[in-house]
Image (cartoon, rainbow, N blue to C red; front, top):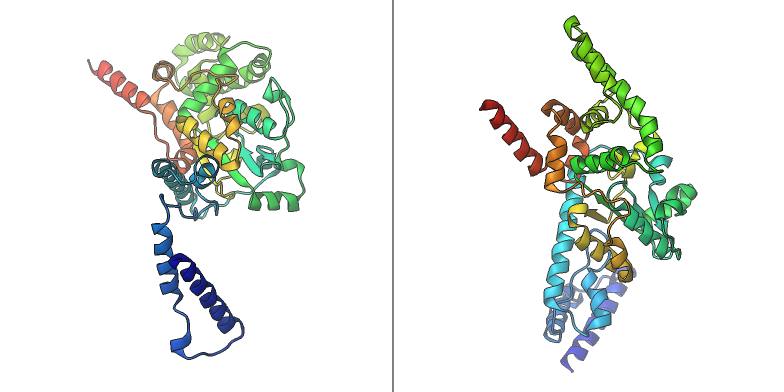
Length: 379
C-alpha cells in the first residue's frame, strides 16, 4: 500500500516538473517538486520488496546486464551469485574496451571495404562479428550461419553476408544499432597457429598457399642471407647450401618474413597472419564485446546470452575445424626455440599495436625459454 502511494506521488511530481519546465512556468521555489527525495524514497521501497538486486544499465553498450534477461525465463528473482559473475565479466569487458581506447589515442583508422568484408552480419539477431582468422573463426562462422538460418558442414565454403555487401547508409545504421564483437588472440600464438596449419599440414587447402608463399618466403630468405654474408666471401658455399635447403618453409623463415616491415602482408591469403587491428579497425569501430581465445568459453557464453542465442553454445565450443593446438606451452617453446631473439623482437615490433590494443605481452612460455637458452649459453 505504501509503495502504491509512493508511486502516485512520483507520477504527480513528474507531471508537475514537466509542466514547469516545458511551459516555462515560474513557480515559487517551495512548490518545485524535490524529485531527488521522491526517487530516493521510492527506490528504498522497491529494494525492500526485492529478493535480489537488479543490475544497472551497462553504461557503454546501453544494454542491461545479461542476468536480467536470463532470469526472466528461469526465476522470478535474480540470483545474486549469478549476477556477481556476469557483472564481473562486464567489468572485464569495460577494462578491455578502455585498453583499446587508451592504445588508440588519437589514431583513427579508415574503415575500408576490406575491413567491412571481415565484419559478418546477422540481421535476424542484430549482431556484427568481426572475423579474425586463426581465432576460433570456424566455430563462430558456423554460429553466424545458424543465426542466418543456414546449416552447412564446412562454414568456409558458405556465403555469410558482410558489411561490404551493403550501401554506406545501411553500413552506418548497422554499425550504430547492432551488437558488435570480435575475438582476439596473443599474436605470438596466432602466428604459430597460422604456420602450423598453412605450412606444416599438406591438404588440398594448404598446398596452394605453400606453392604461392614458398617462393616469396625463400626470396625473403635470400635477401636475409645476402645481407648476412655480404662481406664474407668464404661463406658463399654455406649460403648456397642454406638456399637449397628450402623445400619446407621453417618457422624461423616464416616469422622473419612476417616481421619484415618491407612485406605489406596485403595479399588475400595473408589474412591468416595479418595484424588484427588492420582486419577489424577497433580504433574506428567501437566494439561492444572483445572476446579472447584465452577466455573463449566464458566470453562466448555471455555473448550468445546477450544476443539471445544460448542454444548455439555447443557450436562455438566445439573443437575447431582446423585446430592446431598452437597455444600449448610445449608447442610454443619448440617452435620459438629455433627463432633468434632478433627475429622475435622484429616480429613484436610489427605487432606492437595489436599487443597494446588487446593487452598482450610475450607469452611466459617464450620468456622462460629465452632465459633457459641464455643460461645454457653461459654454461
